[in-house]
Image (tube, rainbow, N blue to C red; front, side):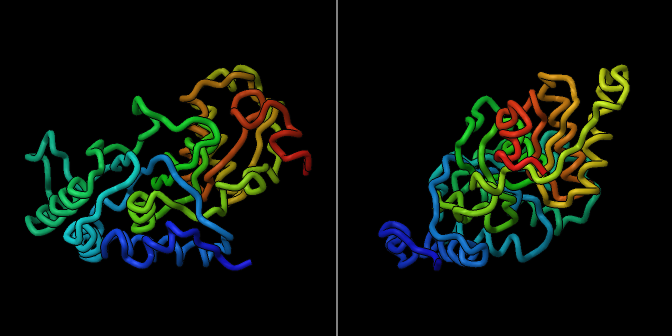
Length: 270
């Protein structure tokens, strides 16, 4: 089915909230169409990766939005930047790159983003609750939100992240949907010696191995000790997001959407 916009979406697209919001809505709508979403959904927060300076295009986009009066419509945190504001004397790049990076940071602050400058937005006081839709960028934050918190976010990249934050809308597709969150691959670690599973170092190794094998599929781990700590779950997710494209996983008995194997797999155990 083609994408259907409600009256509010169409009004934003038509420019009733200004040119910056119209541009942001065009980005969201085109993305939704490419994902074959049938409609958009509300988000309650965003985490922005676009604030990390990679070149002129990123700065041009942010400054265009800011100059046209863009403001985020949901609470929005910022990922790491290219500069250490606490120790500026440690910067070793050229002056032009430093100034461009600072200008990019300023643009996102001007749009109302909270200057958190962290890739671990899930360690802030306000965290999304289970089932809550957000638009998060940054790979380890995305997988933590989905797997550990049970919040719902697809993999949002540069430009799309701030577009969602401005409009407060995201495509109803991908990991926002129940069906995309069900596990399709089972990893049984019950044969791993218990003394190894008692070590923190085991969990990034497990995550790295799983990430290399599954790509962007959703795995479920069985045989691990119940009630794994957030730190151990974080290690699985961040390692898997680095070695592959892991954005969601389950651990039976530890993650909120996996009280048992059948539930984690949506009653279709592979």
